[in-house]
Length: 222
Ligand code: CA
Image (cartoon, rainbow, N blue to C red; front, side, top):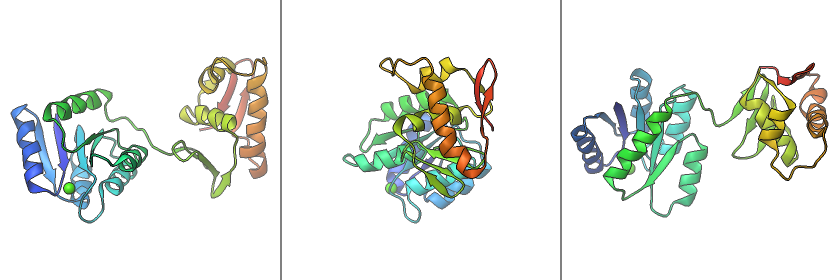
């Protein structure tokens, strides 16, 4: 396993690197976000430990740019003890986990092991399909540049579609992922909400992205 440590504080960076090497991990250090971007662009790291406080672009911006550059290595963010907003911004910005400073090195390693088990799969923070985009963190959706106002349930249903574009989803699957056990007990609730969604995300834009697949369910055109 090869890890990229992004930390400008020399002492902290070398402490982490030394600890990792003792555990048999290969570890490189980037002292700025900009350096991290090119290093991660040229080497396939298995994980990235990213400090929030960096000179130049900070950890949040570094994480966003890594993701937009197509780097999907798991990112573990290092944040300040009472930086709840930092932790939220980091996770919503594409980080996979965080650790607050000061941390135990054993915990850092355990978190890295857990993260690398998930692998470097494509997991964008903003979902997109065609010209549709949806941001689960801010609960906003757009068709092209136009923002679409959706009810909570419409948003939930669209999110299910957008997590699996191009797949035929049965009414049961849609119900299972967008509703809980206290759902309105109407047998056609999914059809009703698909109709609402089409009225908002398709019809005003002359699109037909949510297709009916006869006898099977619905599909969002990829
Ligand atoms: Ca730092």
